[in-house]
Image (cartoon, rainbow, N blue to C red):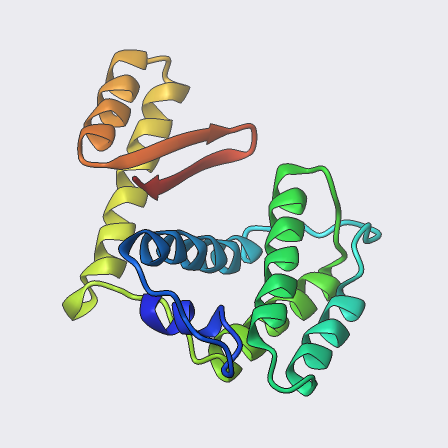
Length: 178
């Protein structure tokens, strides 16, 4: 998927400067895009929206109608990533309807049109790994609630040694791979 995403970052009539550094940066960008899509499911709806999703959707279609301008489309999608992160952090807000529109926008443009998909480990192990990490984080949370900070810290430190970053938030816990 990283190579597909790399190619989509340049207009189809432009030349592409392929390098390992560019490919690494592309991988990080793709990861940010996929993480934002995952985060949409964690957003809490508000009474009103401080971001305009319909205008964003229109700009995405305009980019496609402008000679299939995928780099501009991706720029608009990364605007959506900023919005998702701002809503998740509590600095912006979206209604439940706008959250659904945003999720549909990602589904339509990222997955259906651009053909990107999340890369998972073979044999569904990625899903299993995620569920196991969630289980460990639940046990860690129980330990914290019982004021057993030694166990809580041991779980966090053990996950860190395995390359899993645990982020404590005021409304729960997030994790990501290093």
